[in-house]
Length: 98
Image: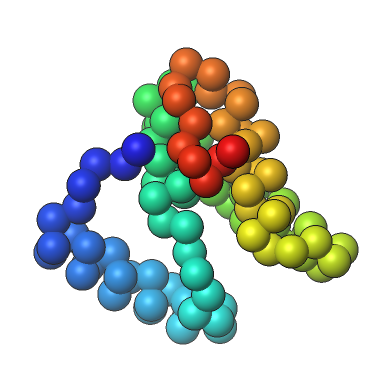
């Protein structure tokens, strides 16, 4: 589970994500932030910190391919989170990964 964000950190994160969505023309869809932050935090502490950005990229790539093939976005993301979470067995999975 990711650390609790302060109100200032939460606001900064929300502004950043809004800017990235706008720059990439990504619709304002539900983002399971706790699940993504939790998994990437576990990856950082179980492997090496530089593994986080490419892991996040590969998660997004997988979900995009699955959606293009007709799978529901939520299902594809849950499956991807579980698959990567299973690679980091020392840490407990979040509910979103189940």
